[in-house]
Length: 211
Image (cartoon, rainbow, N blue to C red; front, side, top):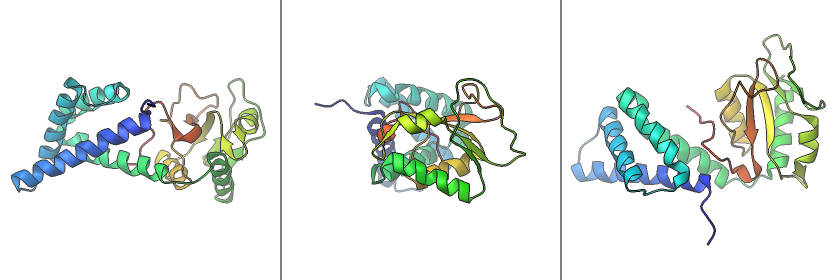
């Protein structure tokens, strides 16, 4: 029996949470306020973690979301969080894009939208790009050449980006790509965040989510 992937585990959790929230509301026959929904889902997550209902792969996520809900209450927007997870992971699950082709199509679209795009330089040390505020994408030439084979992504590729994060996430998703969460500290390009795409969109942790 094949082991569950992170994508499968987080989607299973999100779908179950939303289903149980809906079932509970129907039982009580009353419209819940956002605060009541967040309270229900926080308790649901606590019980799920305690009972080990879901894969260990999402245990850290549950712990973080419980902490968030306890500190922010309705502001944690747990229902919306689960809805966003379902939308993005189901979107790429149903996508038929070959991810190497998808990345190159996205690069071409960004060039057309007047982004600064650099894919012809090997990146092994910290570099600086003066873009004068223009959105920009930098990809190591060696990674781009060696991590795609026959249109398929066979190894992870780092994207160094300076742009509106939500716009970037939306563009990537429209091409069937999930991005890792942005990281400024690990970026080799100054003023850019590092994102990563993975073969088959199988990220080891939660992707960058749309708001």
